[in-house]
Length: 410
Image (cartoon, rainbow, N blue to C red; front, side, top):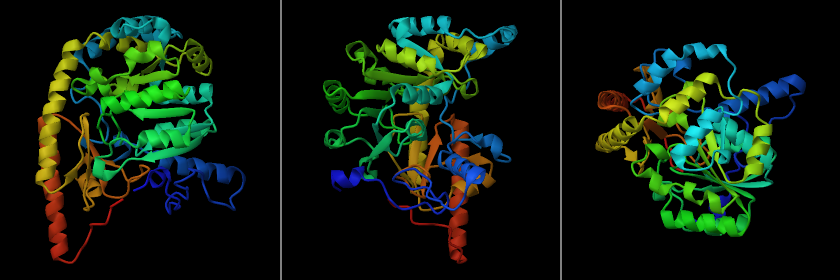
């Protein structure tokens, strides 16, 4: 496949949403006024749908669709929040001063280099509004939030498509793509989502140096990196001081299993940009409880070490179990696995009370791709047992002439 082919987005129109895969713009016509706007918003919701929708699904017992720490909310954080519930009677600190000070000590970076926000999604939107890039280079498949944020700010998007045969890892030809596309902003994900692999160190450093030399702003999303064993050896944090056009995005959501509190932060030596981002931020964006939970969570070192050990062990167990069932599993170092099967497994699993992430709405993926979070042994075993039942029901259906498989190749 040529580099030109890899960067060219598919141009077919989705029959479900009416949205061009190339432009991300609705192609429907003939609907006017409020109806058209309402339809556009509904289509956008479908397009950017992701995991964590267990509350919208009846009778979900096990939610494998969200990639949070399998150990759950740290006990120390839970106890702390219960004891500090009276803090809800006060307004939050709009500067997140104590939290930023705690983050500063944790990462050995100046407090001024940190901006906290209402989750990573808000911070992406703030960056898009403050930076206003004309052209953004993204990888695909990847997290929808990047597209959503930069489309809203009016940027043109280019895509570097990751290949199945490479386990959706960035290849050597990424630099050629970067040179050809000449964007003014690049987003890298470390580790990748939904694939879970890390960018090879030499390749990552070459990409950063090229961006630095050519004045290209580089955002590195490290929201899952703290759940990767040895992950801090792959961070871009030490290079922030050398490059005002480098920014690292992180979140408490995944690391400490607190998605309901909405807490993320960016780190950058570009103080003027951080101030500009903050100027777009609503007052009291980060709640009192989120700030206090973040401060307490940073003290949970034993919890984090236990998490890394559990994730590595259970990821290998789950990977083996899926492969033993004839399922193609892609290499991951994160707390989740991407797999492919030509059997329709999501709906049958949901009927058994298990929710997994159907990845067919990711750009660059089609039907048959699924992502599952790594959980504790008992839950992982239950998923595998349920898969056995689904696959057996599939085989029985085929014997009786009922086919539920499909072709999901790229």
